[in-house]
Image 1 (cartoon, rainbow, N blue to C red):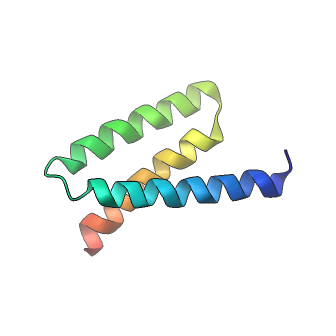
Image 2 (cartoon, rainbow, N blue to C red):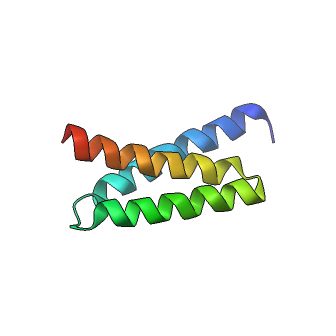
Image 3 (tube, rainbow, N blue to C red):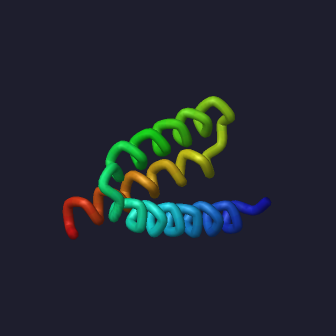
Length: 71
């Protein structure tokens, strides 16, 4: 797979994860949910050497912090 395709997939994954995290941030325990899911996803991506899972974990964290701190 070319680098352009990989980058496009990573960008789309980041945006989808960020949007999903913003939806989850409406729940009362969103910090705990996003925190646990992000850590598990990042750890799984790190052990499997999957950059895609790591990008998704960062997107989840970014989406939640954006919605929580910026409104």
